[in-house]
Image (cartoon, rainbow over all chains, first blue to last red; front, side):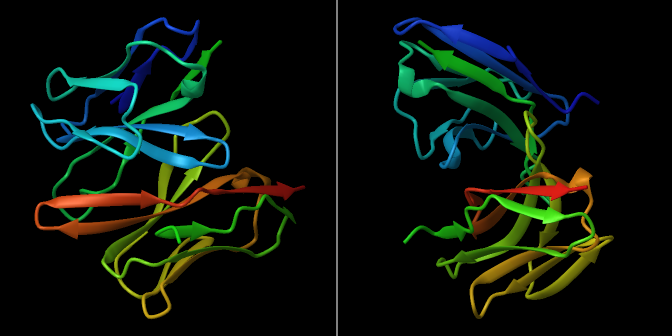
Length: 115
Length: 113
């Protein structure tokens, strides 16, 4: 099992450019999440999808959109990148049921720089 | 006051030391308590998971929860250089079918050989 995979690993964008971060999991998990991690700020939830076909805003959704393409895939789109979106982005998934259903499995992250 | 507060660090200790990492919280509805470990340039991974007050031991690691004081700790015995990482506490509140996970900001631990 690959677990949670993310592409790309690194990306540099100019202000105003758009891009989509891809995430896929092969654990048949119901719920998927997008976080950003910044120094001194910890992990902050951007959007999540409790199940296929649903998405909800997290703590810092402004400037982002998401798509839960199917049960495996959850993408994050930056329509018009800003320097404030320079961060490390993590995708995570949970089974959502059972005793350890809340355990989050994280991907390796995407390091994004917006100049 | 933030829901979850974690000592900011960083923390540097010599190899073999006992390490104590702590988080406090204000939300009495938190039911599940976790510690994640994050190596440099990697995603976080679950280290310990508990839901009740008391101690849970796993090898050199002990997770302690005190719900009356709203305080959780992670103890690392005989610390090793391989324990050098960022440690994040995390807490879960469940309401019906929904759950909310809140992370602490993390503390970076360095174990010197």
